[in-house]
Length: 88
Image (cartoon, rainbow, N blue to C red; front, top):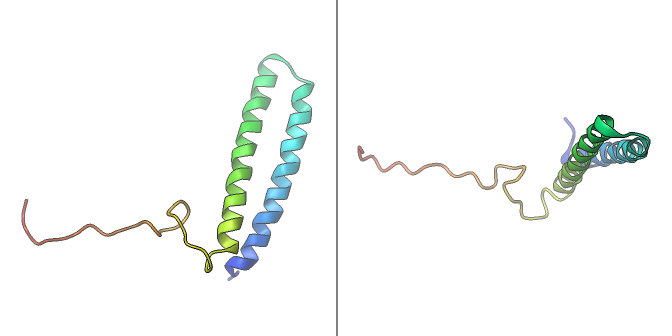
């Protein structure tokens, strides 16, 4: 099983591939018009979101043990409901 620190490198590589795909999609978009251009716009938005999330995951994996975590990609914010034994 991979350690989180090792996974951060894989996330970095995936982000680089996403960035290349995003740049290619932006170049393709310039040659399109109409419905094809709108489809390219949606692809670009999706790739931008994926790249943002990949960067966040890389950072989380890199700093997992040294930095406080939010509940965005972890269970840090989960709490169990209180059970008081009374019927409602």
